[in-house]
Image (cartoon, rainbow, N blue to C red; front, side, top):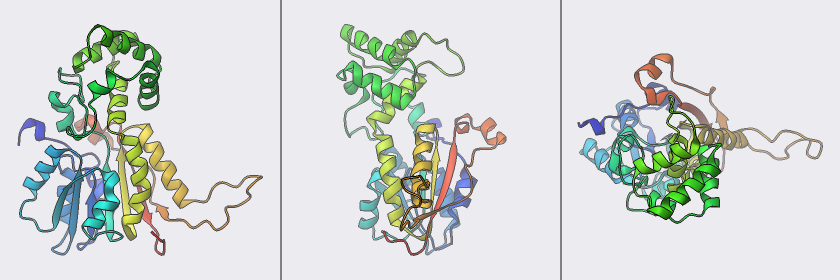
Length: 314
């Protein structure tokens, strides 16, 4: 295994325990990455168990097919988790899934590969696509989006207070020479932000925002939070690990709407006919101090768990 293939899964034991798997469970890992969670899930399954592995990244899919070659319990599919209903129907698993896991964001191999363009630690092409063969690259978008669109994306998806200033700097820089590399973009952003280099590089939020936009990460998440419940069997568990507040907020809000009636108000004293679809399981889970120390990328992780209620129509 090369250094780039190494990836330490976050909240590994907590996530697998939260799935509450029986030996004959049907499980979906919607974000394979490099398979740390999938490997632990398979170890819980007996001969009648089944794991469906999904990832958008063709390199991750190739890794999964190699790792689980010959294991008839495992099926590997290249797809986005927002295509989950279609994928489960194709494999005759719709409404039969006992556990669904999403580990959001990018994997260590993606971050550590300069040619993928997710990071600015080494110079590489501005790509940032989870699937390098699908949709426009970050460079294509950055060199054509107007200042208002750049500002909106950097502000809304990066929660960057200098979004307008950074957008103007990007427009100015690309007028001199098209943006094509991560190092130049990082330098442009750092110069525009005026923030000193502390523990977090000034370009971190902007890179996050661009990646989220290019891959429609929040749109995909919002769809799967609704449709993922449909593919679950009664009593099936849905586990989501997120890495920033934009993701976690959407998970919390979507599941709360499905688990609890809207708060009463003067206009609507009570929600008539509300039928909960989910039960929220436990509280927000974060990595302990030991995991944060040994895996710095776990520091911002947070996990939520929900269970589909019996008798809920899909």
